[in-house]
Length: 81
Image 1 (cartoon, helix red, strand yellow):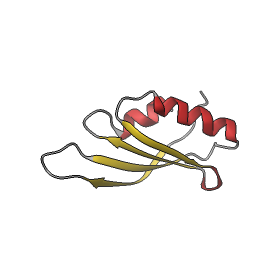
Image 2 (cartoon, one colour):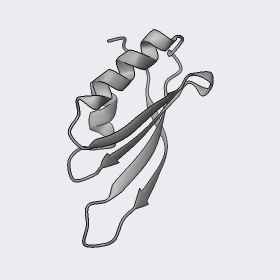
Image 3 (spheres, one colour):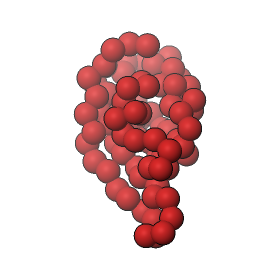
Image 4 (cartoon, helix red, strand yellow):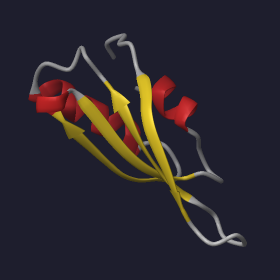
């Protein structure tokens, strides 16, 4: 897949203290330029255990990913992409 510069723009944690936490990160992806890129990114993220949802916002050149933080991490998501 293309090499892109990814930056974690923000993260939010939603969970109770005794449960796994779902995190949502917004990744900046300035090199995304087409729907083909979007499809490849979503496919790569779908292969990662713990990813609940991935959305590519082409107009903003961002990727929004919700994941279980006991199964994966934001750095692992950026590496997979």
